[in-house]
Length: 345
Image 1 (cartoon, rainbow, N blue to C red):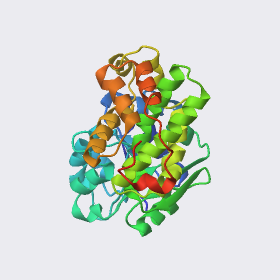
Image 2: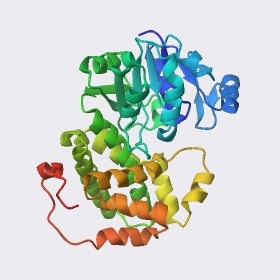
Image 3: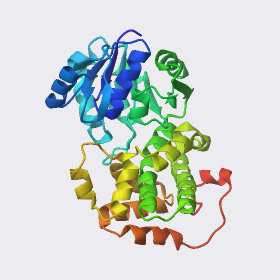
């Protein structure tokens, strides 16, 4: 591969463009907002989403999707989940037959309950549909941009494509593992954001380390049950895209979803929090989608339900967590039983 384009100049897209330079490429970075495009070109920095990190000279910022995609061997799609369908619809006519497409978006479409790779497969031209991979794992954008050691997972139905991207994008500080469980990798990366909101609420209420550990453990069981019911492999959630990303997002100071939970616990409304930030907390939209998926599959998802009640029904955060604590006592399920949708949560 010679030509790489990153679609989306949020924190994650900007970090991946910087990482692409480390891997030996001169990527084009597509920027949606004209004002931000001007800032990137004039200052060589993304002050909206990744302040304090200089863009290497190898990154070229562009405002045109056709220009970004022109002759690209690899398109890295890193836009928020709620705009991915529209962006890919506009992008698709400009994707050439040999292009590989890597989804770096973490979310689930609210309306259709589709994973990001499913949207790509639906909208991309036929040749490109066979060359889709996904990237997920415990990856704060700022630390990737700074070159701090990071490990992540590349998943694709095409094992050869995953290995090719691994070889193309990995560096000594950006270690990539491969596997084939696309559904598991995507669901782990999306659903952990809902758990991070819950963890932020627990921390904001000062419930203690014991409560946080219990919440993460039961959250992982909930993610695994739902993921398996949707076709993922249970063991995927024991890896980087599952427990690794869950730990990072639920405990890390840079986690937007955890910060949202903290704010909710301290009395800030969802509307006020969203009005005060440019960044997207994917867990809000994912919570709606997860509620839909749980209903579709019949899988119990008590943490998702309570987070949804706080976000969308105005339920007091403390009342929501007390609802979880007061649930009927039951045995802890064996790991292999997580695959059974009939198991109560």
